[in-house]
Length: 120
Image (cartoon, rainbow, N blue to C red; front, side):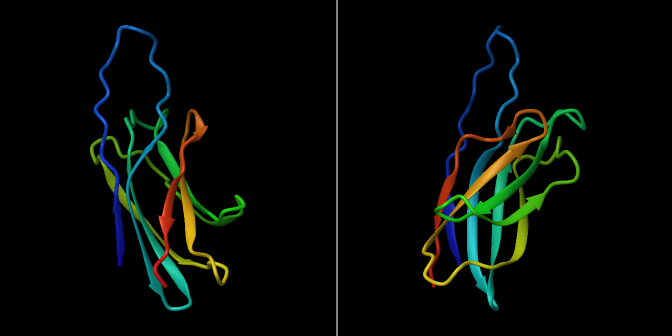
């Protein structure tokens, strides 16, 4: 199983207006599982409740085609960071890298994507 860790960044609060923060992808694990892949993603997001929370993440190929999506059905206010899995992600033959992008219920899909190298 391949594990890629990304540091958590401390963000200082300022006196300015509060903006919707994109979910941060803290860690990703990708492991071969039968004919597909199991993808485990750890997110960090300042969930405040049903009005603002990290509500999903997706797996994309290098052309931006969606290979899988994990919808998050509720906020994780007291569980930060948190990890959720997606099973049976079918990756086209020859694909060596996929990309993870997270989503917030307020700001939509984040700008940042994390590349994950697949070890066949």
